[in-house]
Image (cartoon, rainbow, N blue to C red; front, side):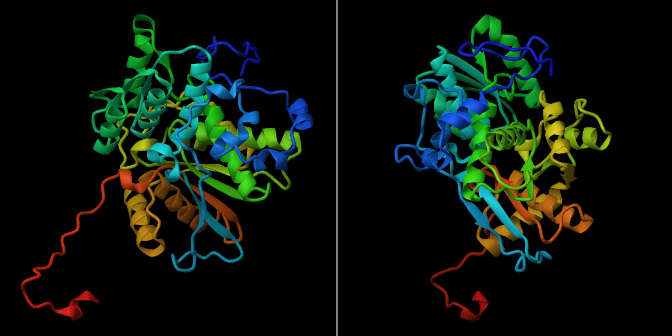
Amino acid sequence: MTGQHYPAGELHGLSEAGRPLLVRYDLEAMAAALDRDALTRQPDRNGFWRYRDLLPLRDSANIVSLGEVMTPLVELDGARLGLPTKEGKLWVKDEGRLPTGSFKARGLAVAISMALELGVTRVAIPTNGNAGAALAAYASRAGMQSTVFCPDDTPAINVQEIALQGADTWLVNGLINDCGRIVGEGKESIGWFDISTLKEPYRIEGKKTMGLELAEQLDWTLPDVIFYPTGGGTGLIGMWKAFAELKAMGWLSGTLPRMVAVQSTGCAPIVKAWEAGEEHAPVWEGAETVAAGIRVPVAVGDFLIIRAVNESGGFAVAVEDEHIMRCRDRVAADQGLLLCPEGAATYAAYEKALASGQVSAQDRVVLFNCATGLKYPMPKVTQALDQHKPLDYASFG
Protein backbone atom coordinates (compact mmCIF):
# COMPACT_ATOMS: atom_id res chain seq x y z
CA MET A 1 0.00 0.00 0.00
CA THR A 2 1.33 3.44 -0.94
CA GLY A 3 -0.69 5.48 1.55
CA GLN A 4 -1.85 7.80 -1.22
CA HIS A 5 -5.29 9.35 -0.68
CA TYR A 6 -8.03 9.73 -3.27
CA PRO A 7 -11.06 12.04 -2.84
CA ALA A 8 -14.42 10.62 -1.81
CA GLY A 9 -17.46 11.35 -3.94
CA GLU A 10 -15.65 10.63 -7.20
CA LEU A 11 -15.58 7.58 -9.44
CA HIS A 12 -12.44 5.47 -8.95
CA GLY A 13 -11.04 2.21 -10.29
CA LEU A 14 -7.62 0.91 -9.30
CA SER A 15 -4.96 3.15 -7.81
CA GLU A 16 -2.21 4.69 -9.90
CA ALA A 17 -0.08 1.72 -8.80
CA GLY A 18 -2.63 -0.66 -10.30
CA ARG A 19 -3.77 -1.93 -6.89
CA PRO A 20 -7.16 -1.93 -5.09
CA LEU A 21 -8.40 1.20 -3.34
CA LEU A 22 -9.86 0.82 0.17
CA VAL A 23 -12.49 3.09 1.69
CA ARG A 24 -11.36 4.67 4.95
CA TYR A 25 -13.57 6.30 7.59
CA ASP A 26 -13.14 8.62 10.57
CA LEU A 27 -13.79 5.77 13.00
CA GLU A 28 -13.42 7.94 16.10
CA ALA A 29 -16.11 10.31 14.85
CA MET A 30 -18.26 7.39 13.72
CA ALA A 31 -18.05 5.74 17.15
CA ALA A 32 -19.01 9.00 18.84
CA ALA A 33 -21.97 9.60 16.53
CA LEU A 34 -23.46 6.10 16.41
CA ASP A 35 -25.05 3.87 19.02
CA ARG A 36 -24.37 0.24 18.17
CA ASP A 37 -27.57 -1.22 19.56
CA ALA A 38 -29.81 1.58 18.32
CA LEU A 39 -28.39 1.20 14.82
CA THR A 40 -29.41 -2.45 14.59
CA ARG A 41 -32.88 -1.89 16.05
CA GLN A 42 -34.19 0.63 13.53
CA PRO A 43 -37.34 -0.88 11.97
CA ASP A 44 -36.77 0.64 8.50
CA ARG A 45 -33.41 -1.09 8.09
CA ASN A 46 -33.57 -4.63 6.76
CA GLY A 47 -30.77 -6.99 5.80
CA PHE A 48 -27.29 -5.57 5.42
CA TRP A 49 -28.61 -2.05 4.71
CA ARG A 50 -29.13 -1.80 8.48
CA TYR A 51 -25.39 -0.96 8.50
CA ARG A 52 -25.61 1.84 5.93
CA ASP A 53 -24.09 4.33 8.41
CA LEU A 54 -20.93 2.17 8.22
CA LEU A 55 -20.96 2.18 4.40
CA PRO A 56 -19.86 4.86 1.89
CA LEU A 57 -23.28 5.70 0.38
CA ARG A 58 -24.14 9.32 1.22
CA ASP A 59 -27.76 9.50 0.08
CA SER A 60 -30.05 6.61 1.07
CA ALA A 61 -32.26 7.51 -1.90
CA ASN A 62 -29.62 5.83 -4.06
CA ILE A 63 -29.91 2.46 -2.33
CA VAL A 64 -30.61 -0.26 -4.90
CA SER A 65 -32.36 -3.10 -3.10
CA LEU A 66 -33.97 -6.42 -3.99
CA GLY A 67 -35.20 -7.25 -0.48
CA GLU A 68 -31.98 -8.31 1.24
CA VAL A 69 -32.23 -10.34 4.46
CA MET A 70 -29.90 -11.21 7.31
CA THR A 71 -28.58 -14.65 6.38
CA PRO A 72 -28.91 -17.33 9.07
CA LEU A 73 -26.25 -19.13 11.06
CA VAL A 74 -27.19 -22.82 10.78
CA GLU A 75 -25.57 -25.01 13.43
CA LEU A 76 -24.35 -28.42 12.27
CA ASP A 77 -24.47 -31.52 14.44
CA GLY A 78 -20.82 -32.51 14.48
CA ALA A 79 -21.43 -35.82 16.28
CA ARG A 80 -23.86 -37.03 13.60
CA LEU A 81 -21.39 -36.00 10.91
CA GLY A 82 -18.64 -38.00 12.58
CA LEU A 83 -16.63 -34.96 13.69
CA PRO A 84 -14.68 -35.02 16.96
CA THR A 85 -16.32 -31.80 18.16
CA LYS A 86 -16.64 -31.33 21.93
CA GLU A 87 -17.30 -27.97 23.54
CA GLY A 88 -16.88 -26.19 20.19
CA LYS A 89 -19.59 -25.01 17.82
CA LEU A 90 -19.84 -25.39 14.07
CA TRP A 91 -22.07 -23.02 12.12
CA VAL A 92 -22.71 -22.46 8.43
CA LYS A 93 -23.53 -18.89 7.45
CA ASP A 94 -25.87 -19.56 4.57
CA GLU A 95 -25.49 -16.76 2.04
CA GLY A 96 -27.73 -18.57 -0.42
CA ARG A 97 -30.74 -16.83 1.15
CA LEU A 98 -29.81 -13.47 -0.44
CA PRO A 99 -31.28 -12.10 -3.68
CA THR A 100 -29.90 -13.96 -6.73
CA GLY A 101 -29.02 -16.79 -4.33
CA SER A 102 -25.47 -15.85 -3.36
CA PHE A 103 -23.21 -13.59 -1.31
CA LYS A 104 -22.39 -11.66 -4.48
CA ALA A 105 -25.60 -9.72 -3.79
CA ARG A 106 -23.82 -7.89 -0.97
CA GLY A 107 -20.93 -6.52 -2.98
CA LEU A 108 -22.90 -5.77 -6.11
CA ALA A 109 -25.77 -4.08 -4.27
CA VAL A 110 -23.37 -1.59 -2.68
CA ALA A 111 -21.25 -1.20 -5.83
CA ILE A 112 -24.29 -0.53 -8.02
CA SER A 113 -25.77 1.85 -5.45
CA MET A 114 -22.50 3.79 -5.38
CA ALA A 115 -22.29 3.72 -9.18
CA LEU A 116 -25.81 5.16 -9.32
CA GLU A 117 -24.86 7.87 -6.83
CA LEU A 118 -21.79 8.74 -8.93
CA GLY A 119 -23.64 8.92 -12.24
CA VAL A 120 -22.67 5.62 -13.90
CA THR A 121 -25.09 4.35 -16.56
CA ARG A 122 -23.28 1.33 -17.98
CA VAL A 123 -21.33 -1.43 -16.19
CA ALA A 124 -19.44 -4.59 -17.12
CA ILE A 125 -18.03 -7.57 -15.26
CA PRO A 126 -16.24 -10.90 -15.80
CA THR A 127 -17.81 -13.76 -13.85
CA ASN A 128 -17.76 -17.45 -13.02
CA GLY A 129 -21.53 -17.15 -12.50
CA ASN A 130 -22.88 -15.65 -9.31
CA ALA A 131 -21.28 -12.21 -9.54
CA GLY A 132 -22.68 -11.80 -13.03
CA ALA A 133 -26.15 -12.77 -11.85
CA ALA A 134 -26.02 -10.22 -9.03
CA LEU A 135 -24.67 -7.50 -11.31
CA ALA A 136 -27.39 -8.15 -13.89
CA ALA A 137 -30.15 -8.04 -11.30
CA TYR A 138 -29.01 -4.93 -9.43
CA ALA A 139 -28.05 -3.05 -12.60
CA SER A 140 -31.47 -3.74 -14.10
CA ARG A 141 -33.08 -2.63 -10.84
CA ALA A 142 -31.10 0.62 -11.05
CA GLY A 143 -31.94 1.18 -14.71
CA MET A 144 -28.36 0.64 -15.87
CA GLN A 145 -27.10 -1.22 -18.91
CA SER A 146 -24.90 -4.21 -18.03
CA THR A 147 -22.55 -6.46 -19.99
CA VAL A 148 -21.31 -9.77 -18.57
CA PHE A 149 -18.55 -12.10 -19.84
CA CYS A 150 -18.51 -15.74 -18.65
CA PRO A 151 -16.08 -18.60 -19.28
CA ASP A 152 -17.88 -20.92 -21.69
CA ASP A 153 -18.01 -23.73 -19.11
CA THR A 154 -19.79 -21.57 -16.51
CA PRO A 155 -22.75 -23.54 -15.02
CA ALA A 156 -25.65 -23.16 -17.43
CA ILE A 157 -28.13 -22.01 -14.80
CA ASN A 158 -25.84 -19.09 -13.95
CA VAL A 159 -25.51 -18.01 -17.57
CA GLN A 160 -29.25 -18.27 -18.12
CA GLU A 161 -30.15 -16.22 -15.06
CA ILE A 162 -27.65 -13.52 -16.02
CA ALA A 163 -29.24 -13.16 -19.44
CA LEU A 164 -32.79 -13.37 -18.11
CA GLN A 165 -32.10 -10.61 -15.59
CA GLY A 166 -31.21 -8.16 -18.33
CA ALA A 167 -27.47 -8.33 -18.98
CA ASP A 168 -25.91 -8.48 -22.44
CA THR A 169 -24.34 -11.91 -21.84
CA TRP A 170 -21.33 -13.41 -23.62
CA LEU A 171 -19.57 -16.77 -23.37
CA VAL A 172 -15.78 -16.67 -23.73
CA ASN A 173 -13.45 -19.57 -24.59
CA GLY A 174 -11.17 -18.91 -21.63
CA LEU A 175 -11.08 -18.41 -17.86
CA ILE A 176 -12.31 -15.53 -15.71
CA ASN A 177 -9.01 -13.65 -16.03
CA ASP A 178 -9.44 -13.77 -19.82
CA CYS A 179 -12.94 -12.35 -19.40
CA GLY A 180 -11.50 -9.68 -17.12
CA ARG A 181 -8.99 -8.67 -19.80
CA ILE A 182 -11.85 -8.16 -22.26
CA VAL A 183 -13.69 -5.94 -19.78
CA GLY A 184 -10.55 -3.90 -19.09
CA GLU A 185 -9.71 -3.45 -22.75
CA GLY A 186 -13.25 -2.29 -23.54
CA LYS A 187 -13.45 0.48 -20.94
CA GLU A 188 -12.20 3.28 -23.18
CA SER A 189 -13.94 2.35 -26.41
CA ILE A 190 -17.29 1.24 -24.97
CA GLY A 191 -17.46 3.49 -21.92
CA TRP A 192 -18.60 0.93 -19.39
CA PHE A 193 -17.49 1.06 -15.74
CA ASP A 194 -15.48 -1.99 -14.70
CA ILE A 195 -16.96 -3.65 -11.59
CA SER A 196 -14.51 -6.56 -11.57
CA THR A 197 -13.41 -7.91 -8.18
CA LEU A 198 -11.43 -5.23 -6.29
CA LYS A 199 -11.07 -3.04 -9.40
CA GLU A 200 -13.37 -0.48 -7.78
CA PRO A 201 -13.58 0.26 -4.04
CA TYR A 202 -17.20 -0.54 -3.20
CA ARG A 203 -17.79 -4.26 -3.71
CA ILE A 204 -15.47 -4.84 -0.76
CA GLU A 205 -17.64 -2.52 1.34
CA GLY A 206 -20.68 -4.61 0.49
CA LYS A 207 -18.88 -7.84 1.33
CA LYS A 208 -17.76 -6.20 4.59
CA THR A 209 -21.35 -6.54 5.76
CA MET A 210 -20.81 -10.29 6.21
CA GLY A 211 -18.48 -9.43 9.09
CA LEU A 212 -20.81 -6.80 10.53
CA GLU A 213 -23.76 -9.19 10.39
CA LEU A 214 -21.80 -12.08 11.90
CA ALA A 215 -20.66 -9.87 14.79
CA GLU A 216 -24.24 -8.83 15.54
CA GLN A 217 -25.54 -12.42 15.32
CA LEU A 218 -22.93 -13.62 17.84
CA ASP A 219 -23.62 -10.71 20.22
CA TRP A 220 -20.47 -8.83 19.20
CA THR A 221 -18.10 -11.66 20.16
CA LEU A 222 -16.60 -13.32 17.11
CA PRO A 223 -15.91 -17.03 16.47
CA ASP A 224 -12.45 -18.54 16.85
CA VAL A 225 -12.05 -19.48 13.18
CA ILE A 226 -13.71 -18.53 9.88
CA PHE A 227 -13.36 -20.73 6.79
CA TYR A 228 -13.97 -18.76 3.60
CA PRO A 229 -14.05 -20.02 -0.03
CA THR A 230 -11.45 -17.86 -1.74
CA GLY A 231 -11.34 -16.91 -5.39
CA GLY A 232 -10.90 -13.15 -5.71
CA GLY A 233 -11.08 -13.00 -1.93
CA THR A 234 -13.21 -9.86 -1.61
CA GLY A 235 -15.25 -11.28 1.25
CA LEU A 236 -12.27 -12.40 3.31
CA ILE A 237 -10.61 -9.01 2.87
CA GLY A 238 -13.90 -7.23 3.57
CA MET A 239 -14.62 -9.16 6.76
CA TRP A 240 -11.13 -8.54 8.11
CA LYS A 241 -11.60 -4.84 7.34
CA ALA A 242 -14.97 -4.89 9.13
CA PHE A 243 -13.51 -6.53 12.23
CA ALA A 244 -10.68 -3.99 12.37
CA GLU A 245 -13.16 -1.11 12.08
CA LEU A 246 -15.49 -2.54 14.73
CA LYS A 247 -12.54 -3.14 17.06
CA ALA A 248 -11.33 0.44 16.60
CA MET A 249 -14.84 1.71 17.38
CA GLY A 250 -15.01 -0.35 20.58
CA TRP A 251 -17.94 -2.42 19.36
CA LEU A 252 -16.30 -5.85 19.71
CA SER A 253 -15.29 -7.89 22.73
CA GLY A 254 -12.75 -10.72 22.74
CA THR A 255 -10.17 -11.64 20.14
CA LEU A 256 -10.52 -11.54 16.37
CA PRO A 257 -10.98 -14.84 14.51
CA ARG A 258 -8.36 -16.70 12.54
CA MET A 259 -9.17 -16.34 8.86
CA VAL A 260 -8.76 -19.41 6.64
CA ALA A 261 -8.58 -19.04 2.85
CA VAL A 262 -10.02 -22.19 1.23
CA GLN A 263 -9.21 -23.18 -2.35
CA SER A 264 -9.34 -26.28 -4.54
CA THR A 265 -6.20 -28.22 -5.37
CA GLY A 266 -7.12 -27.60 -9.02
CA CYS A 267 -6.76 -23.83 -8.56
CA ALA A 268 -4.82 -22.80 -5.46
CA PRO A 269 -2.65 -19.75 -6.20
CA ILE A 270 -3.27 -18.17 -2.78
CA VAL A 271 -2.42 -21.39 -0.95
CA LYS A 272 0.78 -21.78 -2.97
CA ALA A 273 1.87 -18.19 -2.29
CA TRP A 274 1.01 -18.40 1.42
CA GLU A 275 2.92 -21.64 1.86
CA ALA A 276 5.92 -20.06 0.14
CA GLY A 277 5.77 -16.99 2.38
CA GLU A 278 4.95 -14.73 -0.57
CA GLU A 279 2.34 -11.95 -0.83
CA HIS A 280 1.77 -12.21 -4.57
CA ALA A 281 0.67 -15.31 -6.45
CA PRO A 282 1.59 -15.99 -10.09
CA VAL A 283 -1.14 -17.08 -12.51
CA TRP A 284 -2.26 -20.64 -11.84
CA GLU A 285 -1.97 -22.51 -15.10
CA GLY A 286 -4.62 -25.04 -16.13
CA ALA A 287 -7.10 -24.01 -13.44
CA GLU A 288 -9.86 -26.60 -13.07
CA THR A 289 -12.30 -27.40 -10.24
CA VAL A 290 -15.94 -28.35 -9.69
CA ALA A 291 -16.18 -25.29 -7.43
CA ALA A 292 -16.48 -22.76 -10.26
CA GLY A 293 -16.70 -19.75 -7.94
CA ILE A 294 -13.16 -20.27 -6.64
CA ARG A 295 -11.62 -21.00 -10.03
CA VAL A 296 -9.72 -17.71 -10.13
CA PRO A 297 -6.20 -18.22 -11.55
CA VAL A 298 -4.95 -14.79 -10.43
CA ALA A 299 -6.36 -12.33 -7.87
CA VAL A 300 -5.63 -8.60 -8.03
CA GLY A 301 -5.97 -8.48 -4.24
CA ASP A 302 -3.78 -11.51 -3.51
CA PHE A 303 -1.57 -9.55 -1.10
CA LEU A 304 -4.60 -8.29 0.83
CA ILE A 305 -5.92 -11.85 1.22
CA ILE A 306 -2.57 -13.14 2.45
CA ARG A 307 -2.09 -10.20 4.82
CA ALA A 308 -5.51 -10.83 6.38
CA VAL A 309 -4.69 -14.52 6.79
CA ASN A 310 -1.32 -13.77 8.39
CA GLU A 311 -2.47 -10.88 10.58
CA SER A 312 -5.25 -13.08 11.96
CA GLY A 313 -2.97 -16.04 12.65
CA GLY A 314 -4.90 -18.07 10.11
CA PHE A 315 -3.83 -20.23 7.20
CA ALA A 316 -4.60 -21.16 3.59
CA VAL A 317 -5.63 -24.67 2.61
CA ALA A 318 -6.54 -26.52 -0.59
CA VAL A 319 -8.90 -29.50 -0.79
CA GLU A 320 -9.51 -32.12 -3.47
CA ASP A 321 -12.61 -31.90 -5.68
CA GLU A 322 -13.61 -35.43 -4.69
CA HIS A 323 -13.52 -34.41 -1.02
CA ILE A 324 -15.58 -31.30 -1.79
CA MET A 325 -18.38 -33.27 -3.46
CA ARG A 326 -18.34 -36.02 -0.86
CA CYS A 327 -18.83 -33.37 1.84
CA ARG A 328 -21.62 -31.69 -0.11
CA ASP A 329 -23.49 -34.98 -0.39
CA ARG A 330 -22.96 -35.95 3.26
CA VAL A 331 -24.06 -32.62 4.74
CA ALA A 332 -27.13 -32.57 2.48
CA ALA A 333 -28.21 -36.11 3.36
CA ASP A 334 -27.43 -35.91 7.08
CA GLN A 335 -28.19 -32.28 7.96
CA GLY A 336 -30.67 -31.25 5.28
CA LEU A 337 -28.48 -28.32 4.21
CA LEU A 338 -27.59 -28.22 0.52
CA LEU A 339 -24.23 -26.50 0.22
CA CYS A 340 -22.86 -25.17 -3.04
CA PRO A 341 -19.51 -26.73 -4.05
CA GLU A 342 -17.61 -23.67 -2.79
CA GLY A 343 -19.40 -23.91 0.57
CA ALA A 344 -18.73 -27.64 0.69
CA ALA A 345 -15.06 -26.82 0.17
CA THR A 346 -15.06 -24.97 3.50
CA TYR A 347 -16.52 -28.02 5.23
CA ALA A 348 -13.89 -30.25 3.60
CA ALA A 349 -11.18 -27.79 4.70
CA TYR A 350 -12.55 -27.87 8.26
CA GLU A 351 -12.34 -31.67 8.28
CA LYS A 352 -8.78 -31.48 6.96
CA ALA A 353 -7.79 -28.85 9.53
CA LEU A 354 -9.27 -30.90 12.38
CA ALA A 355 -7.24 -33.90 11.28
CA SER A 356 -4.03 -31.86 11.03
CA GLY A 357 -4.55 -30.06 14.33
CA GLN A 358 -4.80 -26.61 12.76
CA VAL A 359 -8.17 -26.23 14.50
CA SER A 360 -9.41 -28.01 17.59
CA ALA A 361 -12.65 -29.65 18.65
CA GLN A 362 -13.12 -26.82 21.15
CA ASP A 363 -13.06 -24.05 18.54
CA ARG A 364 -16.14 -22.04 17.61
CA VAL A 365 -16.09 -22.20 13.81
CA VAL A 366 -18.07 -20.51 11.02
CA LEU A 367 -18.10 -21.90 7.49
CA PHE A 368 -19.33 -19.67 4.68
CA ASN A 369 -21.72 -21.22 2.19
CA CYS A 370 -21.54 -18.60 -0.51
CA ALA A 371 -24.54 -19.65 -2.63
CA THR A 372 -27.56 -21.90 -2.74
CA GLY A 373 -26.73 -25.42 -3.81
CA LEU A 374 -29.79 -25.35 -6.08
CA LYS A 375 -27.75 -23.48 -8.71
CA TYR A 376 -25.38 -26.38 -9.33
CA PRO A 377 -25.66 -29.78 -11.05
CA MET A 378 -27.00 -32.56 -8.83
CA PRO A 379 -27.06 -36.36 -9.23
CA LYS A 380 -29.88 -37.74 -11.33
CA VAL A 381 -32.59 -39.80 -9.64
CA THR A 382 -32.99 -43.16 -11.37
CA GLN A 383 -35.40 -45.02 -9.09
CA ALA A 384 -38.84 -45.33 -10.68
CA LEU A 385 -42.11 -47.16 -10.05
CA ASP A 386 -44.80 -48.53 -12.30
CA GLN A 387 -48.04 -47.66 -10.49
CA HIS A 388 -49.92 -50.33 -12.45
CA LYS A 389 -47.86 -53.21 -11.02
CA PRO A 390 -47.94 -54.63 -7.48
CA LEU A 391 -45.53 -52.78 -5.20
CA ASP A 392 -42.99 -54.41 -2.93
CA TYR A 393 -43.31 -52.11 0.08
CA ALA A 394 -40.36 -53.78 1.77
CA SER A 395 -38.13 -52.18 -0.88
CA PHE A 396 -38.80 -48.72 0.59
CA GLY A 397 -36.38 -49.44 3.44
